[in-house]
Image (cartoon, rainbow, N blue to C red; front, top):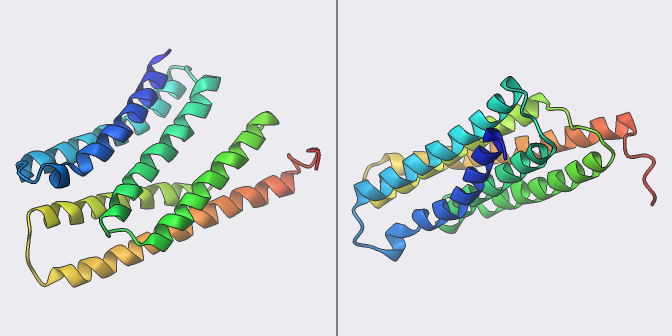
Length: 198
């Protein structure tokens, strides 16, 4: 297994570990809040860095493999859904936004399998890139909310923070669905799947 794929596997292994770490403050109420927050921040940064590095290294060193083409998007879905499930479970992420993103990710994975079966790649679009950026921003803001809650920070900013998060998650859900619809539209126009038996 080459280096980019090892980085991707590292991300996959870290996803369930992050899930457990996220709930450590509930499982072990006596845990040092600074240690808890440091653990979340470090794990999140490592997971995002491996996501950035695996693709760059694969392209730069010409280490792109069939396994990597399947493994990387799968790891993306697992990590993002892990993050959003954590935020949903403690009431930070709205249920409706989570459901739209969940449907989109499963639909995208299914469509990608169909396209790979035809030997076709799904080209990126600007909404897909916007979706990725909004995913990261929503996670960062959501985890910041969680950390502030753990430290029991008080202030009048909470209501504003709640509103900002709702808007941010709404934008994330919309960009997620729109990017998928653009993919589907491009596939329909290309007739890449027109030969499939119905």
